[in-house]
Length: 320
Image 1 (cartoon, rainbow, N blue to C red):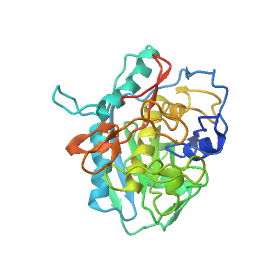
Image 2 (image 1 turned 135 degrees about the vertical axis):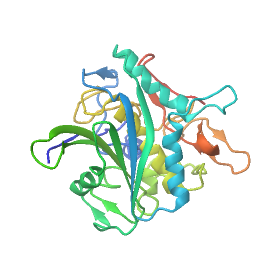
Image 3 (image 1 turned 90 degrees about the horizontal axis):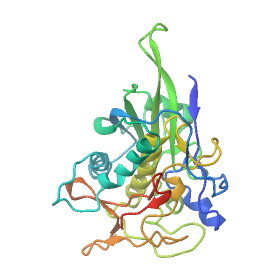
Image 4 (image 1 turned 180 degrees about the vertical axis):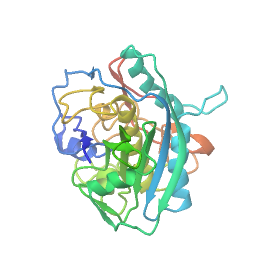
């Protein structure tokens, strides 16, 4: 199976240790250095994700119902229409920044994501140590041209490169539509994100855990009271934004194609106004739990989502 891949680089070059740590947040790779910051986000004439896209969740390992609902509610929150009475800022408003990439490219197409199938493998059918080939095998279930499959691995599952070079990955692969070689060959995109809570929360769940390098401020209280899964939401949010704007590596990105900065990774470590290395910015705080967040979701959820680079203003867009 031929597989196309791209990797996330680092941001915030002016503090390299901080960069190496925090590029883990939904990055495709941790270890590249940043290209010239004057090289702004460019469109490379490739397709952007568009149309009605079904999002399938593939739970690999042991996740409890609450953990599953945190992430499934986040996916649902992306496309919820907000009314005048809806709490703001919302996840849906955050996601609308990705529409500006279509506008900038003079492409009138729209994108609509909807939660579709969820499959679970709590018995670890292919073991607790996964390779890249095994990830794509898991992701290929229910894959089609109009799906994004998301593989989510439990806290006791190791994945090649997890923690040492990545917290999550966006990739693409090819699949034949049919049971023989006469079927149509198509390309699909998929995401993998791991729960880092017992393996590397200082790399993949900041700011809900103290970082292993850089400024050692007190960690924030996770909005859904789950450091590992709230960290997964941050990583997943960044990778979904990259999926929408650079699904096959030739859409919008900054720098070298082998180590691109994309919609979220171009604003690495920024969650609110006033952010600087080691400080995520001014955030909303739940008066009861003390949890920090910057976006409201469905079913009363609160989430922390990364800032997105807005191609219309060439700035990192923050909502709080």
